[in-house]
Image (tube, rainbow, N blue to C red; front, side, top):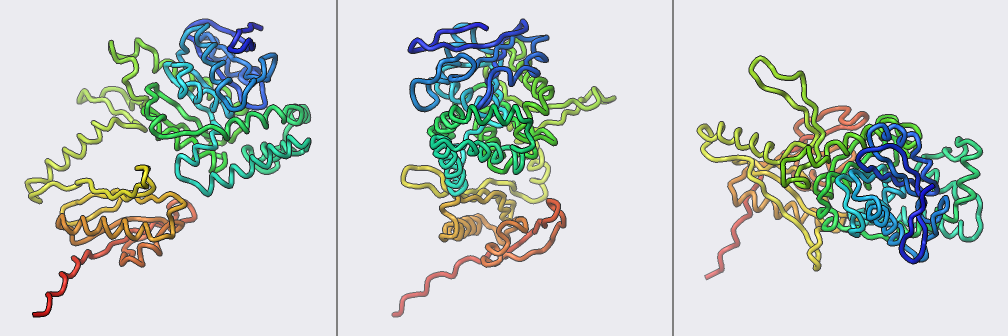
Length: 442
């Protein structure tokens, strides 16, 4: 097993197989490089695959300091020794380390893949303060119990991510490994909770970034994955069907194929000269080849913004001779704190004499305090100033119908089972200009 010297005289061990462009795969916690074995063997037919053992595992020196800086630097040292990876991929805690290595400037891969990264502090960056606090409390308690010698504590960590009863369903050797290595995992959990994320930092990542989520994973994981995928400049999100946090075992071949595809799309030769970092990572499928008219159809999950704008402009040009003025004019109201941080807002369009409310969001700590009413009133006033006499929006049965009804909106249509078991309500309201102030008495 190769050994690399890292900062402070430490050692990083790693496995290696295959030949070709470099792909680095970072394992979860607790674990070793062998966790990637099946995916690595599949990738090794076309790539040089390196799987490091994170600090404290399989002969790699334990981190001499708290936090994830040492682990991130170890990945950076590997890239310095072997060259920049075509793709850097990390699973679970390994996804946290991979992301931290890139955010800290330790490594600059051509592409980044994050497989259910357990980046709990992303919840705080998303403004989900209550969910973040509850999740942090679970893992703070877990770490304390492990440090106190509770051999059953690891069950808490496993069942949080893998689901109730998952620990008991694991083979006995796997349970024994988890119990034995719980102190190392608790150290990694503490390091993960110490990280901080910001959307400013995520947006600075220039490489295509693929985030993979199991469709049976907990809601907290979905929030983390969706937040990262939407926060980076060139992100995409893939949901694996019938998968949970065990997808490294259950969906190893699918993960290998996703990483291979990402690496292929990030290849320098795949981009025009001088634009190696400029292309947006998109999921695109060509349908049926060229038609008789010489046109090809493509299905895209992340269409280019300029293509979407072209559709809107085409519709506007078509309607303008009839309606006399353009529609679909964006209008928004935002709320920011004293530091300029966005804490809520509404995004809408002015469509001639109609206001269409599209997006409404408030961070959890700002809800039920009157801010939503203030934002909606400000938006409606701005719409009235622009000639709107009506407003419409839609909401779901698990969302804010009572809020909108209190502000004068009424349901005019309902879709059942949207999503299954719920309803989608379409609501409208007549906008009334405010009365002028009374004239002063003579």
